[in-house]
Image 1 (tube, rainbow, N blue to C red):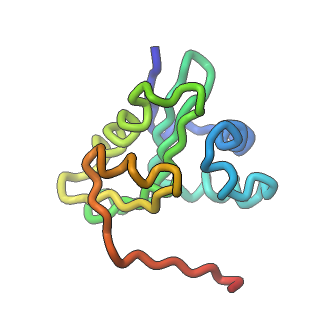
Image 2 (tube, rainbow, N blue to C red):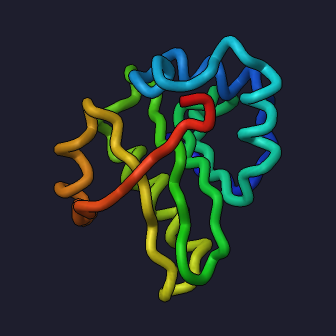
Length: 133
């Protein structure tokens, strides 16, 4: 049985090991421990999914809890996918937010068809800028 926890600290190593078991890992700086530690340290809403003591999923967000919540990482171990864990991670995230708060995310290419299926609407004007470009 999968259990869900809110803002339970995890180590950068645990996070990296989980991301390595997902397609999201290829787009995250897994070889930069300081960056991954900063990602965790400065997130203010982290929902984790556990199979006993094994971390199998995460929804990592930065939010003001009232207007917007940027769900920056939604990852489920590939051997645990298709069990509703991702949807439950989102539901647990929503429980922590005011009803007025919208969830915003950027989809991994492999998940672009997943989000409409669970109620997300595509926004036509999202922009990103890397500071080193």
